[in-house]
Image 1 (cartoon, rainbow, N blue to C red):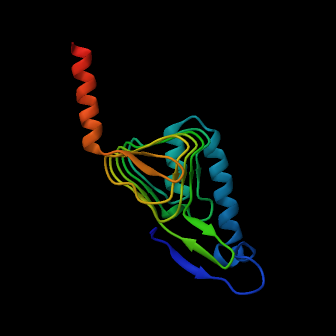
Image 2 (cartoon, rainbow, N blue to C red):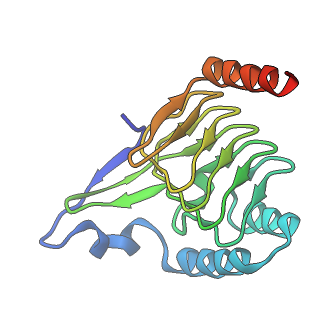
Image 3 (spheres, helix red, strand yellow):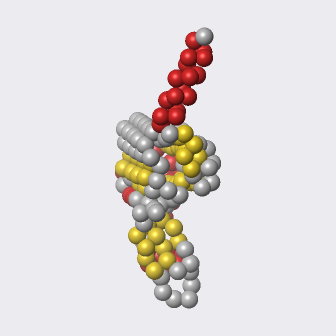
Length: 177
């Protein structure tokens, strides 16, 4: 189960109709402008500066966000990315979700030395462990343990850390023959 805070909404409309009761309009507008600027800039250190300074995201040293990455526009401060991680092209990182009768908010924690493949979506309330690899076009709807290779929609573990080490060892042995 993802770790999210649940907030029921009242009235005859879905929770998205209550958006500006949950987050200030000017915060969303500022975040949107900063995120759009960051999506198109090729300068990684500038992106990290924008994310840390204006969005209050926790971004580790030497972390790289590829072009078109879309952090959460409403609650980016709930996103934490560890050192030396790579977030692939066009990945979306959500810290909120609006449903019919409620909205949910949850931290997204991405560990150190994590690789997230292109076009992935990370849902609120999940943690991706240190050294994990998430393949392209993955829906991360649950926690990913450290050091595994995961992928799919929804995500599943493809190789454990031990299986990856065995595979690398056997490939190395074959290449030395």
